[in-house]
Image (cartoon, rainbow over all chains, first blue to last red; front, top):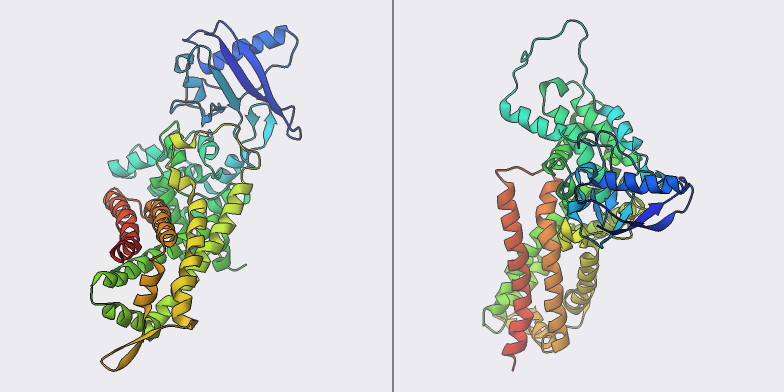
Length: 249
Length: 227
């Protein structure tokens, strides 16, 4: 396959940045998208040019590190992570546009790498549970209905990649925040901080500069882990019931 | 800031205001369309004119109408505030974005649809509502009681083809606005449940077709029956 790549290059956060066009020749259909970029970077390095910076880690679709807005969609044309996307999803001669996630709360570090620590700060604000230290508790000590455990696990599948923010026309982080609020609010272990968690995580999400949700459903459609917007409705319930009943002023 | 203002200033709080005012306006539209069906009664406008008088004089309706004004204004102000906020959340736009592959057109263009509806609302209020409240109106007498003849004004107005076209077009935009707004308001209120959401979505779709279509049928009926 021969491809034309239009890649966003930006030296640092302060730099204005712009697209640079590269030609990728002899691309195998069986390569993953990131392997295709690896080959391009090898060629750039051989030529003494600065390779294209992009985030990646496990390359197994479980860590949430890879990103890339490919041809107008986060993680490209399939509902998966970029590392699980293969070149067979593209056709010979195609032009592929690759951009970083675009959001005020995700500043570009370099090229296609964005700083997603805003997500970490949302987690720090309330995405945890209090537990007693000491001996290891027995498994299944706390009874949890299967259906509730499943819902919590569905929400816990979120890998925090930020595709929801990237897909949302408002750069809203509500799918991410709501998944994290939900996975803990649903379980007995999450009850201690339940109200404070909803209040603090929403406040942190707002202060990071993410937009507000307009219920377009784009996040759910693009999420590589299939997180549902029913979580956003749950977060709304959690938040409003918390603010009217908690002791936090 | 108190906890109340803090809540209402949060993104979730502002969305809540959009949802509540929107739902109240849906209730208003339901009442408005049902009352206006009296235009089809074929009694020379007697029932419609009596209804119009009731709607402008009854104290309970007065209270509801103030709530409607507040809802319209609140819905507009908060939509502007949220739109600006949401725009600022993405200072650098994507060069290519395939929104149509992951969301409905109407859901991505509520602001545009709302602005068109607002322009229509100004024309609509100025033509009928302002006239009924403060304008020179012809009168008609039923059983010795004098009524403003709004029926005549409506009939005269819809003899103009361009106005009928504007009304019908505006109702199509209203339909698209409602097709997202109805179910979306429930989602914002936190009502998303496998038992209820399919019904809410179905009612929302039916509502967004039936109500604008009923509204649009009125100028069309009057225009084409006047020949």
